[in-house]
Length: 263
Image (cartoon, rainbow, N blue to C red; front, side, top):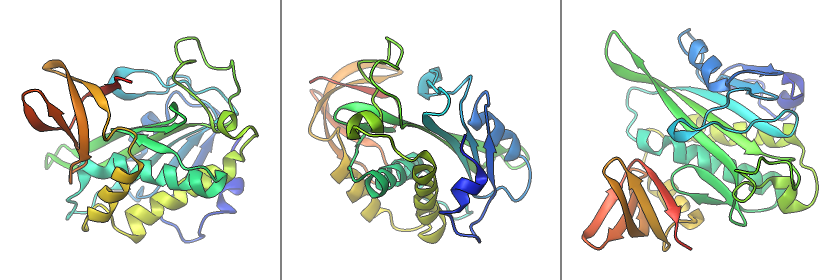
């Protein structure tokens, strides 16, 4: 089990927010959601050794077995001058990618909008939920859920995930220190969201990095939206984090939905 003591060896003593470690939780996003209703939660991280009801995008579950993955939720109080909210999940993707590169020496790619891939296999998913103040009807906080497949081996994934999911251990051929990696992801998120104030500043450099790491740009994709499905070519990451696609009817930006690779 990951413990606060193990993680704090690699974290700044004066970082904002608590580190809360649990043996098991239904979902770290759910617990973080309750905590976010209280004061002084900016930068608080809720970590679970396993999840019984881990959540993914579009109502899916996230496979969260004990002792082999990293499952946490990061609470961020949104500054009043936030202007890059649409990029928040992408910022988390950059943090995970940089942490994996630092700790494991391997550079993952990012599949729009929120999957981290190595050798075409998903090793991380990110789910962001926003909290609204009912009194002012304004978005005040974000809960960023991160799930990383770290030390799973061949054959450990359920049949419905076996062809799509991978792990860092499978990619590297050796186990990875979960505490070190989890700490580094937190460090990278702190850097982006606090030190660099990425939510409020010029996002050009971040969008450029997302483009460099993109597994989607230049690929033929099937775009699924509430209006239906269509085939398109992904051509760029938009300044607000959307995906610019070229379709038979023209070029447009997809800001929500899901894509499937046609290759």
